[in-house]
Figure 1 (tube, one colour):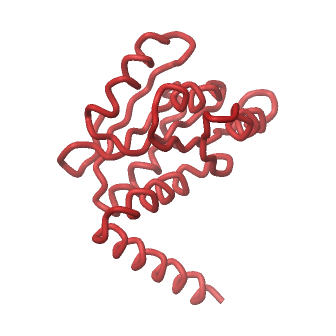
Figure 2 (figure 1 turned 135 degrees about the vertical axis):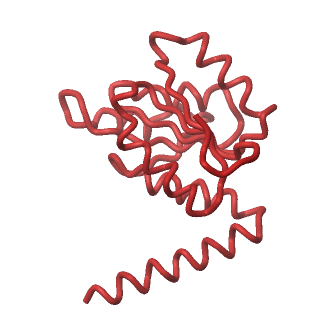
Length: 162
């Protein structure tokens, strides 16, 4: 699946089960607000390890700059991806399982030295998208200007609530 904006994807979104789509769909919605092209795929790291390896190997040649990996029961997905790539990986721990996603959160924040995974809060896929935009904006002045406007609008919305 590819984002609504045409062109080569700058962000790759991956999660391990179609049941996680509802939460992870917020990533695409937010990236779309910024006009960031992304693609989205579902690969179980446990059932399809070779497909995941091939997907990771193709990221850099395709020009992908950031990966967002959601994981509930597949909490290891972000770490596995991070072990195969040199680009930033943002993990989205998803609620589920016996301990409501806390295991996913701990897994993503407890990576081995040299295999970092940036991590947002439980089910906070929107924040993962904003973080990806912030990373991309470091080298993209137009995107940075959009991000500044987004933050100003976000702040104004918060102020007017009270």
